[in-house]
Picture 1 (tube, rainbow, N blue to C red):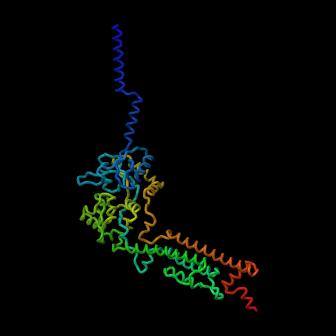
Picture 2 (cartoon, rainbow, N blue to C red):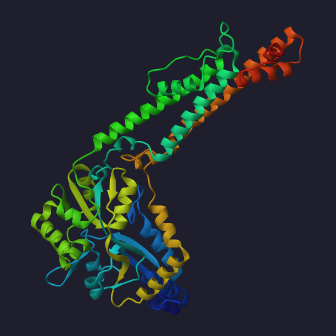
Length: 479
């Protein structure tokens, strides 16, 4: 019995020892699973970024979206890696301190707190010394963001013509000539426009028709007034056309005159420097600020001196703050064209100056020892050649302003008034049909009385109205 107990204890000890050994020395399946988890963790890159629409923005339900997110998705598919986004902790792009250390996304790369920096990160020489940057995925420059009201409208003796473009004025002239000629034709065709007491007398001559059109344009009216249904239709269509056109013209001209300001039209950095009405600045500590600081160009150096003198008063911390200051105060923001183009597309009261300087590009940052930079650069070039980068920009730089908002402060485009011209043309067409119908009814009645063909009577009426002589007159002259 004791022998059986001893044997049982021995077996129990062997089982416990086997399980302990299995924990210390996992089997082949457990080793493969651990290796896969470790490799997956190593292939997941930590990506630092910064909020800057439309490059990076947060979704309402969590996560990120934007140009850079779509770009990184395309790159990860081409190269083969996973990634995790996180926002840069101090909110800076990358600025080198006096002690040689970096802050912002560049700082996280140099301290190896992140593997990649994916954002509108400008490629500069000082950054390239401490981190590696890929080929640019977007080419940009520097320009000026201004309110539209800062633009001086075209002035001169013919300023009163500015509410409409030349196409509209030409269309108005053609509409006037066609309407007056149709009024003359309708008055000739319609029996009601002929005086019954005076033989061969018509109430509307060609000169009277043109004078009637001028009277409507001046909102005064001019006689003789239409009497027949056809001529009244033409008169009503022309008056409605003129009233709507004059209302639009008066509204546009008033808005243009009120928007005229003594502010200079700023389209270059030289003009920005020479004016005294606007303060100007950029993002503090950014690459744009460093460009003006290091520039040897006298104009750019004077712009930097002005910003340095006014300090924090003209420097902003974000693009959102810059847009607000431009809209609400006498302020001009100096920034990169990609951000300015997006601001203009989203805010209809803003514009960008025509001059662009300091052409450069945005790149993806990585550590100096990273082997991904070459692969990322090649993939970016392939995406550029395939047109994928252009498609991404078209997707995220959508213009939200309506055509009317875009044209605000300038001539009204012809398209909004196209329906008015179509209405007038329809009125003229209906009036001519009514005039022919009126003449046909009279011819039918006369044919019944004279026992003649309706077509012959209709031809005689046309000859009488446009040649001034009927068949009866011809017979009388022969007699």
